[in-house]
Image (cartoon, rainbow over all chains, first blue to last red; front, side, top):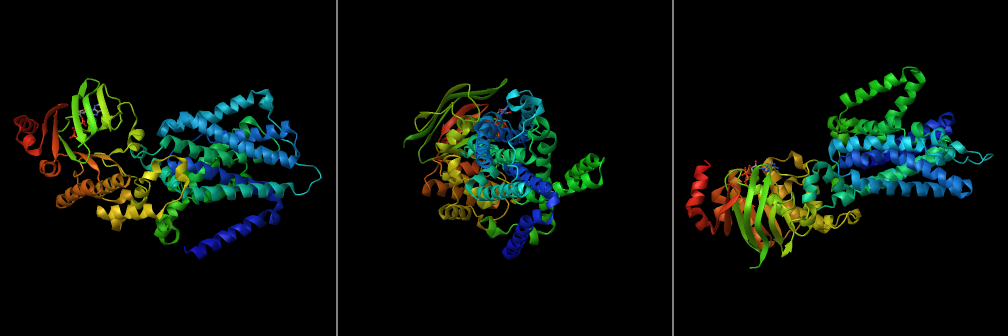
Amino acid sequence: MTSVQKYGLMGFGLVVSLGAPFLAPQFATQLTMLWLMVVFALTWDVLGGQMGYNSFGNILFFGIGAYACAIIQRDLGFDYFVGLAVGLGIAGVFSALVAVVLGVGMLGLRGHYFAIGTLGLGIAAGEIAGGWDYVGAGSGMVPPLYPTGLEGREFFFYFAMFALAVITFAALRALYQTRFGLALNAIRDDEDKAEAMGLHTTQIKSVAWAVAAVFLGVAGGLTGNLLGFIDPRDIAFAGATFGVWMVLMAVLGGKGTLWGPVIGAVVFHVTQELFWTYLLGWQRVALGLLIIAIVVFFPNGILGTLRERFPEWFGERMEERS
Amino acid sequence: MSVLLEVQGVTKTFGGVVANQSVSIEVRAGEIAGLIGPNGSGKTTLFNSIVGAHAIDEGSIKFEGEEISTFRVPVIARKGMLRTFQQTRIYGEMTALENMRISAPEARVSALSLLGGFSSKTDTRGEELLEFVGLASKRFLRAGALSFGQQKLLEFAMALMSEPKLLLLDEPTAGINPTLINGLIDRLKQANKELGVTLLVIEHNMRVIMNLAERITCLAHGEVLASGTPDEVRNDPRVVDAYLGAG
Ligand SMILES: Nc1ncnc2c1ncn2[C@@H]1O[C@H](COP(=O)(O)OP(=O)(O)OP(=O)(O)O)[C@@H](O)[C@H]1O
Ligand SMILES: [Mg+2]
């Protein structure tokens, strides 16, 4: 693709994204969730794709963000929008801090050990939140309500989530173009070599996880407000749904690429919504089959497969990398 | 010449296997030192001990006068002592030039210092060194797609890119096309003379090491058998025995 075609395509995507909630207001919430899925896939790929560390615990940062934001909103008594802004900021920062602290301990684990270790994170957090009265325990938490009488609730959350997805994408794109991006790839390709060359691998890994956690934390805060309810196990720390989908979407689209997770999230979310509409009762079976199909037929993801088959269209050009 | 690396009485065992038994060697600033010995004589183990890949059982390792035997790999690398691997290691999914970029000294300052972009100086240097090892035309290729010999050359170039004071090379000519070996010897000498990198080289090929090193240490069964000039070592009957004995 030439840059003209590429930017043309991106411009078209932007117009569609901006117009979608007006054209199909009845799907506003699903469309908002689409951008959440994009954030999920993009942030998962920081470790999973770029750095080669498969995390099954990233949902932790989403849940922490959801609760942190709601607590700030509830306890500081700001006006709704001020409270939300402050809450989202704190949600992001706090999630990142948790990532740094956890990272120091867990990112010393390699390969499958790390993956299995992270599996426990979301489950443990869900149990803790489900038993903690301060955050409503098992009956969950209700963040302050969007001001009644104010129009455009759906549009507000749609554009907030869309903005978050765009900012996440832009930030990661910029990050991958720095030496830091190369350091992540170096750790993925051969961590022992990276150590032997003197890279600060432990720091790099923690910072990478923190970067993912910032955006997940903000996404959590926003989602709590969007849904108007935070359930500890089914929303905040929903490892079996959101937590697994993150991985699937990134793998489906193409791990370790910039656009792959975006493509994967869109395809996955749309497919899933269609299953729910047309295959009600069988949607979980269909989803399971889809997952198997993804792994069997697209081991390199949609973008990876396209690059192999049509390098002249989807291959990276050399001058882009240099 | 001042002593850059001083290894004294280093012992390393793996379970019952004594891989190094009270080994002492020294490397002087500016020289090319050689380390030879039959298969399994403990050469790679000694490298691993020196660069902090594992704890040693006994002994002392000093780099520029500082005791480093308890330091870990990245810390020692940042002090200016690097190693290459016998089973060549490069970043396979990255291009040759990207391998060079991430090997630049500024990449190991701190994680946050990595957030800057690339300087054209780094790229120029990377390309120069790729040219130096004869890989300039491969700079945009995936490193994992290079042949084994080319990967070895790339690994060597990466090491030079990071401007070490002392470079430990584990069998740099193994797997290299014999017709290219002389060229590689010249480059090792050039790196030593022109870039001022002190070298400690493990080498199986006797012809190569005799031609390259100013002083040679020979290990056998984990112990130092002999050390001295190439001629002294070559003519030492124990060395001859060790090599013939080991087949
Ligand atoms: N990690 C390890 N665990 C157990 N034994 C080991 C380990 N590393 C090396 N050894 C043993 O230590 C001895 C020395 O091995 P080393 O690899 O240092 O030899 P070498 O001189 O480098 O041989 P080569 O010329 O084949 O590379 C061997 O008997 C080897 O089996
Ligand atoms: Mg060896």
